[in-house]
Amino acid sequence: MSGHSHWSTIKHKKGAEDAKKGKIFSKISRMVSVAAKEGKDPETNTKLRQAIEEAKKVNMPKENIERAIKKGTGELEGEQLEEVSFEALGPEGISIIMEGITDNKNRTLSEVKQILSKYNGKLADEGSVKWAFEQKGIILAKGEKQELELKAIESGAEDIFWHEGMLEIQTKPEELGKVRGALEKKGVEIESSSLGWAAKEEIEGSKKAKEVLEKIFEELDENDAIQNIYSNLQT
Image 1 (spheres, helix red, strand yellow):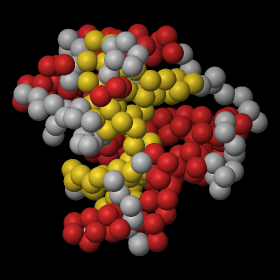
Image 2 (cartoon, rainbow, N blue to C red; image 1 turned 60 degrees about the horizontal axis):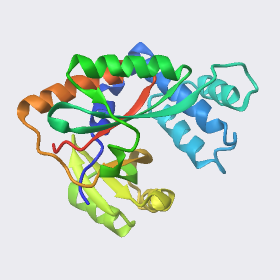
Image 3 (spheres, helix red, strand yellow; image 1 turned 90 degrees about the vertical axis):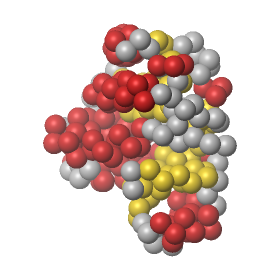
Image 4 (spheres, rainbow, N blue to C red; image 1 turned 120 degrees about the vertical axis):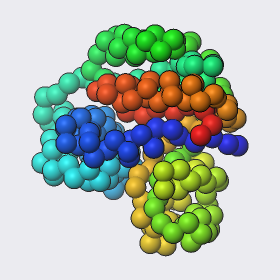
């Protein structure tokens, strides 16, 4: 199995800039609210615990996190949020999966279509892209190369990749929490952990295709609803 999330690179590269604009706060607030629908106790709700950790990574104020949780549980009025997933084909037939949280699915769908068509991409039918991916637990971690790789393997990593100075550790979906816990016990600095999509096989796109895809990713990133982006482009 090969392939990794191309979203993680963009997210961390743009994180500081987005935080200044408040965009990342808005996206993570939505993530927290949706996760809180499954219970407001992070000790028993893994999804919520991970969302809160993401919020803390970008220094979101405690009161913002608490407000987002209350919106999710219905204690405060808020937007009617739902999770959405779109599949698309980009330049040279490169497959793209986009996941998001929105209060208006039709509006988000229209916005995504507009971005894709600008670069000659198009939405694909449900399932026509996802078959080429596998769902994985994805952990991003920092550390000294050899030592971190060894700790990841000892902790039960299924696959590992280096990019943008971070190690992406892939796990079976059901083992995400277990592997993360083992890494934390070994003192590994974890940037984020979540379920994501990994390509079964990667496509070696042309330089032009990579440039176009980067533009697509950046515009999708600017959309308030889009949370995660994955592709099968080889980097």
